[in-house]
Length: 395
Image (cartoon, rainbow, N blue to C red; front, side):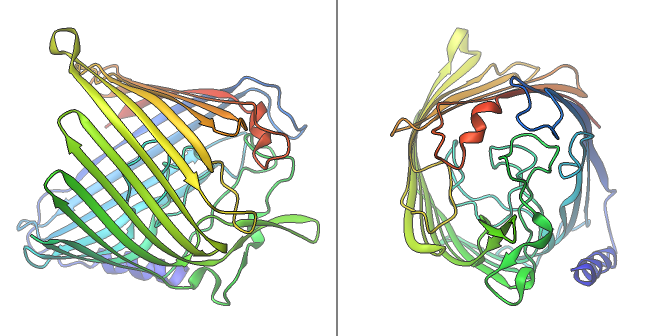
């Protein structure tokens, strides 16, 4: 991996920028405070208050003819309470070349996002989840990949080759939001001899037809969700190879958004099918045209059994609100509740953001868990309610 990464960096450094525009450096630094509402359940953990610090610079450069572009984005978090959560990641470090109006090649460390649902990212299976950042699966690691994109009036076709796999991180012994047993991430197991160097490939077709926005994808590679196994008195992740066939679709008409994500997976125990279906309706122009209120509802089904890695979603309903003040401060609110249909748990999520000045922004998040059955793998969340406040300076 070290040689491959150095080769990519050297290649990008040597890209022939014969005629270039000045590069642009942006980004932010932030201080974040996470406050847990319950006493730490294990003696090694810090109690209650958890501060941390973030730095994420981004550099963008493009050639004069706009055919070449380069983006570098690095993420750093320092968390004095958990050495596993203190980490540096290259979110993006890639070069793009637009050979023609139809063809584009992208090489380097990149991130992609697939999907349309709000409360679960079921088909977004390319980049590994940065699980120690937050529990909402929205933070993703950058991963080395080659992308070949063909855009056409009949739809866009994307080919992806990923030569290296990133393992999922878990909280350390002193970290919060974990079970009684610490997962040892230093000795992960794989179902293939190549381990993290097993090649991953994907192909995806996207098209907009009238009111429909459709994406169909096929993926083969190492599953991003590990199975957790006992090995010589330790809990270790075990990664298997999978085949995913996925579909996402969104139908837009006036203030209505109808959403669907579906997935059929082979390779992690018995084959299974999962989907998320939902609807969002927005009341535009409330209070003399200034505010927008969106109402969301989604249903989750996941047909996996105990032979596959456990997930919190099997048969759940999500309802939520999205409120945009459309003011100069770009104030937004997103809140919702996910309820297990069998009565096995409830999850409440609140996110509020507002710009204080041109450079300063404040964000508030709250995650509340309740009524998770003691027999489930996620019962430890019952004592991990928290709120966090982030103050960021953008440059």
